[in-house]
View 1 (cartoon, rainbow, N blue to C red):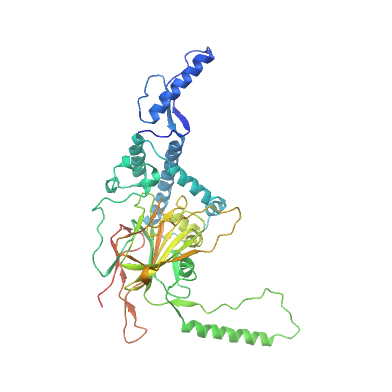
View 2: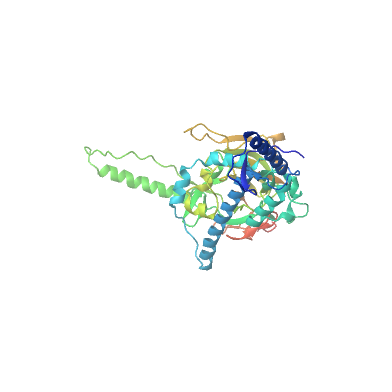
Length: 442
């Protein structure tokens, strides 16, 4: 099978100069052409192993191998720091550092597109098993779960988004459970409470669920009566202070806009943040049976989304490019947010193959508003069953679930409690199809 020869870099030189004499130009050109022919045959898997030749490896392959080594060393360093903190029983708090500020100055969007191009290049068949096994060894990928032989994945991009072998995952059939949509690590779980419906990013910092899902989100919100009374009391205090001031006193302070009364999420709204490592299975599946009504695509940055980045970047998941799916299931509201990351600018949706992410923008061009599409086949949206594929990444990233769960209603409002309970906690490893929460039958 023939392959296109990419620009080559010499790696291992097997011949040496035995004499200082300069050979004639004709013999030199003849020798160079003979070496090039043998090199081309060697790269393409053909016979070209005669003694005295130089062995060449495609430049893209060398760059890929170097990238794997750098990522592996970085992962070992970060894992060591995290394990030391866990052994001491410490939970690392939010703390911006110089690295986060430096990464904000880098053209991560262009770097991610370049990485996507490199990983899409075709790899010689004989080299594929070595590269994929090296990746699996470095990042703990289970090669026994791949649906195809390693030789059938023509590029790293195809290998990253491999499908599972039949029987590799079992979907929890309990109708009263919500399953994990991905293989990954539980970063945060909890219930949306208080004003603004905030999701905890890391200890000491949180972000708004509305900012994550979009201003036009269908997230169920209610007006908090206690906040209404508190806002009225503040307005009375402001009016009394203004009356005490003399008529000639002028303030040059910047005017303050009156903030609207913030709303609170309805009871029974939960969130779950799951981080996909580099070696994890990179496809996203449906956590329950539900109907997808719309999709929002937010263009943005592509910062890393690992544990270190979550501790150092403010509003990490809001700043990054993401695709949000919203809909309805038997428990109420359901949203799945697929967050992009560095080198993971491509997010694909099986229900919308034409969607393109990480689109190049002009220099200094502002981030465009979110692109929204409504799915309305017969007014019920797109129907997905538990375990159906929802999206796929080209590399590790993050998935955020925001959903409404069944609640039991008592006679008193204050005694209202949710039947839904998470069966996982922060830091747990989960596999796609495993239950992450259960509730009782009503």
